[in-house]
Length: 127
Ligand SMILES: [Zn+2]
Figure (spheres, rainbow, N blue to C red):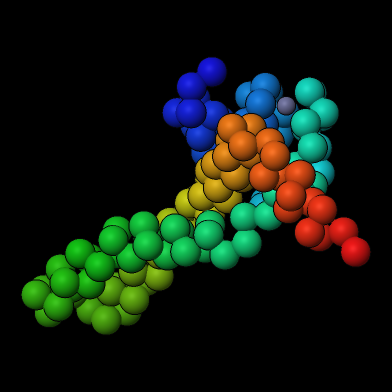
């Protein structure tokens, strides 16, 4: 299994280990473990990385349309706001769970390649 395959499984919101189980029990609520292979995800926290990537991508999709509307003043402000808001919301709701899956897979992949690091992190977190 290549790194690319593992990350692609994350983007598809699937378990990075088996590619079958769901990563999320709802929109972006992470499962504690895979229902198929029982891989543990409870210690993986993507934190602020998925929103960061989502905003980065959404900004690059929406920004050209802002410049387009500035140059085309004949389009009413209502339609400008409606189109920009719809596009931004669609991008955010589409990209966010995939970005979270990507980062969960990336963290899982990093731990597979460096298992003694995970043991150090776990021993630091236990009092
Ligand atoms: Zn699995």
